Length: 462
Ligand SMILES: [Zn+2]
Image (cartoon, rainbow, N blue to C red):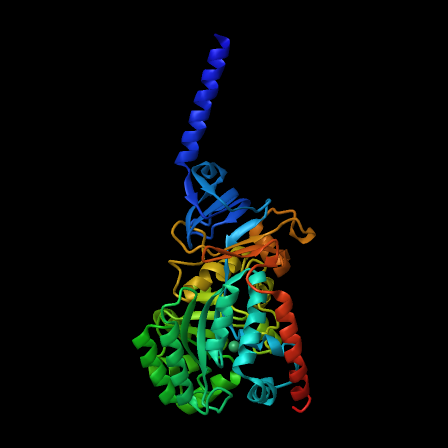
């Protein structure tokens, strides 16, 4: 009798487990056992959190109790690490990574050094090689989306896609002859061909990248305004980056650079304004009214001694503002974690207020702020049901990562890019255990090394 009862209970236990297994929904990826920074509207943190991914989307975020509802072939154990949304680099020139560390402290470096160097060295091959190199750095540093602007942008887009990142890739348009075209007109044509080719790509959003208000002809700006509307694609541009630029527009038009661009009709929800250091309070109001995005590139701005952007005021006033690295010749590194500490500390110093720019705000700028700046806040920037699965895990085993009394503080003041352990973009695992899964890093290192020999020869003549 006892035996039968025991057998009966085993059978029912088995049946129960079986029913549970049957009820478990099949998903593609589970990330568990970490501190989930959702970055949602409630600023929710889940201490023993789980993120469930199916296809390219997040289907549920919750505590460990939700685990029993799902089964997946692949589960990532975050081992007490920090699980957060992929970071967004809102302004860079990824391909310039092959020129990194050249002539870092030359005054007026853009005109005296960078433009001549680029005229001699830029090719489709260089843009591709540089973009692979820079994208690997971003991927391994937890950046899942970048806004890029460069020459031969299609070659950069190809590389970004191969590494598996999202890119808002904008073809550079400038009035001077460059390696990819004799004038602004030729480059607008290149941009159109690129936009048409990549318009429906899942990872790449093509767009127009007019260099700056003073380096692009007005008629080209007008064409870009019309074309970006026609194709409904973004425009990224350096705006109000130097005092010289600000003064020039004041003298010539009695307008600020921001007012000048608005007079052409360029400022709208498709526009991403990089730097924006020399902006007045009226400019900030205008940028908010026109719904433009702003890329705050603190490290590049400090290094070039240009100034401190009123990024804190813009953020508090509700301007769509995210963080950017600028190109690797300007800010030298391409990860956003490296920006965060500077953003927090420089704004404290500039405002003479220790409580200004607290860590949460900086992490928000790196994630949701970036998503807002590119008008993709419905899809990116936070870990929430229905959003695209761009997820980063930082390990907290390393000595710089604990104790954790405040995970935002850890991220902003003590983490670095090498703490990034796992990166998922569009539901696909691209970095696991700090190793890139999508490209042979050794092949990249050799290609960059080979190219640097040519760079060295040319650089000596400048
Ligand atoms: Zn730039």
